[in-house]
Image (tube, rainbow, N blue to C red; front, side, top):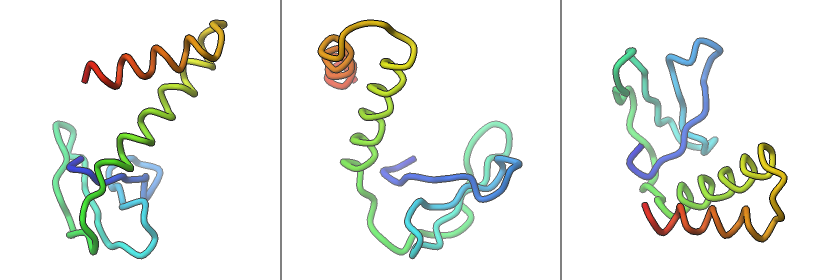
Length: 83
């Protein structure tokens, strides 16, 4: 969401808080979309978001596939450049 990363603030998955411990940024999911509750105390970092998503794609590819590592990474790179 706009270059920020979030984690669940509670088990209900309604309130999400910024991944940075020193930030008060929060959003609420209302069933159809996310609504900003509090502002962040830092500027967004889209590069970090992309990096985390890329690593997640590699991890999930390795979990569900028996392909060699090289192919999984190559596929993740292709998906990254197509977006």
